[in-house]
Amino acid sequence: MKKLPFKERINTGAPLLADGAMGTMLHQASHARADACFDAMNLDAPDIVLGVHRAYIEAGAELIASNTYGGNRFKLTAAGRGAQLTAINQRGVALARQALAACGRADLYVAGSVGPLGIGVSPYGRLPQADARAAFEEQLRALLAAGVDLIQFETFREHHELLLALDVLRGLDAELPLIAQATFYQENLSYAGYPPARVANDLYKAGADVIGVNCGSGPAGIAEVLRQLRFAVPDATFSAMPNAGFPEVTGGRILYPASAEYFADCASTLASLGASVIGGCCGTTPEHIAAMRAALDQPPAEIVDLHIGESAAEQEAATADAPTEFSQRLARGAFTVTVEMAPLRSYRTDTLLGAARRLRAAGVDLINVADTPAARMKMSAWAVAHLLQSRLGIETVLHFPTRGRNMLRVQGDLLAAHALGLRNLFVVLGDPTRIGDFPDASDVNDVAPSRLIDVIKGGMNQGVDMAGHSIGKPSSFTVGCALNMGADDIDREIRILNKKVSAGADFALGQAIYEPERIRRFHRRFEQLAGAPFTLPVLMAVMPLRSLRQARFLNNEVPGISIPEALLARIAAADSPRAEGICIAQELLTQMQGLVQGAYIIPGGDYDLAAEMVAYLKRGDRQ
Image (tube, rainbow, N blue to C red; front, side, top):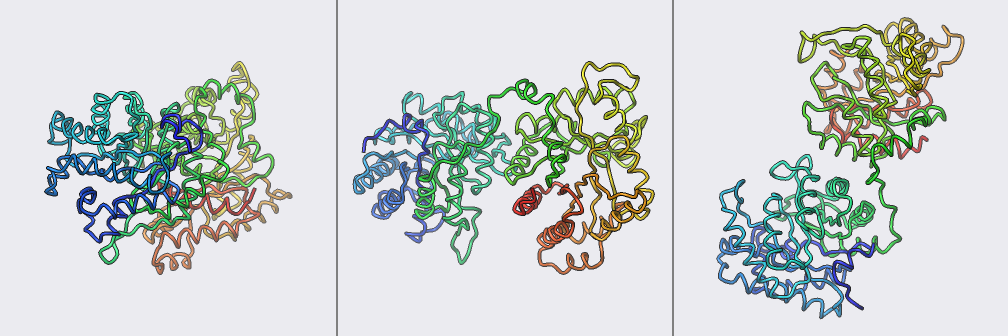
């Protein structure tokens, strides 16, 4: 089989499958300590290293990384093998070549594996940059002399060190292909706090042929980082090599939970997200790679649409006057699943965008963006909603409290929201400033929610403001209101609701209810008073109980929420209150079928829980 140059191969459109973990396999085969110098096994136990390479080749890997990840002067010296640096690195490449020859696969690629030095590099560590450059040059010269097809930098938790290593390689060989893989941790940030977008841009400018992510987390986390990398630099080529989940120590052995079957799905997902090189990191074995090979040999999945390359102006022009997707769902009676997200007390948005991507992957229809909940200072809800729509293509419902806005600002804010493409609104009074961060802040409230709904639907959607002046072109807002179907005084709640419906409310967001009979009672009483069935679409709030403490707080301190003693007892007795809370929420939603038209999940910041709830609802095929 003819061997294409590496750069041509990764541009063929078919993902190239790399191998899996080397350290994991050598640890299992040699029974050495997990912190042993596995690179030295190139000299001490070459047959074991050769066997690992052959197993990966036979599993279907096309890219074999040399057993030289820790082959730098600092790590080898710490193991007492510093004098053998050149021999260890060159024998590592030779063993990979020998494995290819033994399997009759001269068409495959050998990558020289290079990891971080293991000592913090200035300015984040004590190692001078000149010493770091010398160490990388020493290892890279050995690998280049051995005749590698490319260099694979991997598991760099500090991308400035990765950039330094890349620069050293380019000084030695300007044309040799390279894969530059960074590692991210909590909230998808590098060790120094940089998001994937920054790392991707820096590596792209530095000339990395392939920008990638490896280690740090399992397939789901790696997929999320890959989305962000690709979104930041859409013209780049990408790699992704996840761990087999998070490690567990059992009987002195390090075990990884992700199965080979799970990694088959992982390979398809990573390919659909645009990865040109796919492989495995810690915990992956030839069985994982074989499963990935089988998945990649299937017809390719459709590439995920990230709206890359489409300007905000083009998106707005395409959708300016069309009904929102939400309004269309309401019109056809589709069950709608939405999740509330609260902006952070920060100007950073990467965490929220990452959570929103997970929700989108789970199948959420809309994101509700809360505006200063509990009167706490947060980033503008408009900014967050606009970012979600323009960057991720997720339609939003913007919470629009009347409190804190006079009549001039209300109308100006509405025009601004429409200009930004935010056309689904939830009009609500809002929380009083006295309970929040700044109790002395102005608490002006010129317009009641029912009146504002009328201003929007009867005024702006007809092309005029509150004074009857033209706004140039009618707006096209879809407007929702608040509703507590479990209120103690149902008649009063219905009177207030009728004002909102008469003003033009298109839907309601319902207060969380833990007793479905209260909803049935509301329906019966509404029909008695109105002489007709209740038909306004309601998206019922779902607040999964995560702990007994939270449940008691909601029951005792949040107006309008009542949790039966039986449910409190279930949470108290549960081994995992969070899991029991999810089960209770699922049961409640099942009991509410036919009574509400959607679910409005309020996760309290636990977006993984929200994604689980969304996935459950979507599996029900309620649409």
